Image 1 (tube, rainbow over the protein chains, first blue to last red):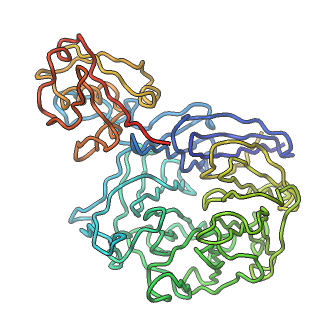
Image 2 (image 1 turned 45 degrees about the horizontal axis):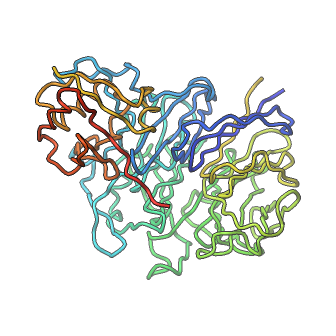
Image 3 (image 1 turned 135 degrees about the vertical axis):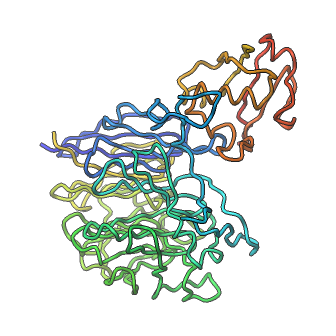
Length: 399
Length: 100
């Protein structure tokens, strides 16, 4: 029998939900890191008990946590004496404690010395690190992890989170000075690794758009052709689009699905061009998008009323599923509240498991985590009344 | 070396696995800088939480109290009151009060 572990990041701590493969009875562990914002937790695909967490606070900054035992115990990598400080005479041999250190690369050798982006008032503004939004462990090496941060940049560790180095070619793209923050800041929130091509990485930035690297993150290009955004002066501009989330199916990595600020989009050519597949959803505004684990043409979104009204249309919480790769959508409502529901579902708060039938999970700003063990046909709340849910990831484990 | 008492806010206690008051050996002169150097050396997991990793500037929502005075905006290298340096009173690291 397989086991399932759902990693939930919230505004006030992390929670870990576990069940057997039936996915009916759940145990809830937490809060871990009580009182801290946990923007994201994700386990390594090659070592599922290796889990990384982004712990943040507007008071005390960024913390990276790591567990090597499936979330039972946690530590800050590099703070346990594994990395000694050779540079400070007064404390030789002390741990360097650099797992929390995210410093933009402006070196002549590897960094592009671009130091400003467009700010809310149109002036150029220095890049200022705020937090890690998303952690994406490598598909091959548990010590390698990518981190998407605010202000938008991509960092990478190859030593299990002890130290982080910016992949500066993204921020150094010539369009960088034209990037600008959305209402939630200027964040790199989506990192997609191509399982068929280890050199190919996709990222998405609010509000700059989608970018692709074909050389392991050294060089980048915007991939926003076909996106249309009424809220920027040139609706078809190369950058400036508020991409909310990108998802792929691992067996068909050239097909990308995107939930944009408005519009549900699809690309069949690795992001070189996009076309709209919003079809009959009641609103094509939303945040998360996910692809069924076994059906590459089955995708899930959660429509939200509008950019001004961040709650489900008509107060009905509905997941929409397309089995045709977009355009034709059906509402999935069984077990979900169909009146007086005014929660939001954030971009990192939806995930699918790899069991049969496919499990689908999402968390709400009202603190519920809903799960479906039957492809989305029916739902139940695994847990209610958590703090607002920021992220949901799921792992399938061998018993 | 001076033995200086430092009180930590709740979240930094849990992060460091420390009590809410710690005693640190501080190289004189006892100032915000030398106290925080000693704190971060003893508890490296706190690096970056009180002051920035690179600029070493205080994080915006962190406050310092000493001898019943708010010394947050004093120069970081200015000697702290003798009551702090002697260990009679603690140097207090506070998370700024939030509204709501």
